[in-house]
Length: 98
Image 1 (tube, helix red, strand yellow):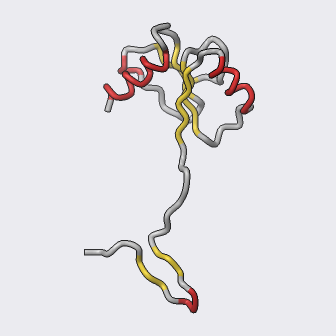
Image 2 (cartoon, one colour; image 1 turned 180 degrees about the vertical axis):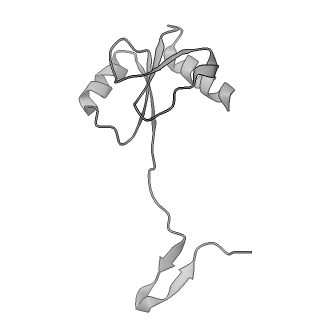
């Protein structure tokens, strides 16, 4: 998995060999051979890693990317319940337990 992240950050960095910033609460990946640090989004970064639930101004994030910054956003997009409730109180499991 380390090679995947190294390749992803290298691609987003576009050869600048800049700093990869990680939002507070996300553990930096120092073993990739990149300069990584926990920080707020700022223009000195080459790549920024954050959650989809960040309170950083969306316009600032958009400008960062438009000006050439790399962005990795992670988050939970939707929820799929393990059980589904049907009309009249009927309950069925989505997954069969073996």
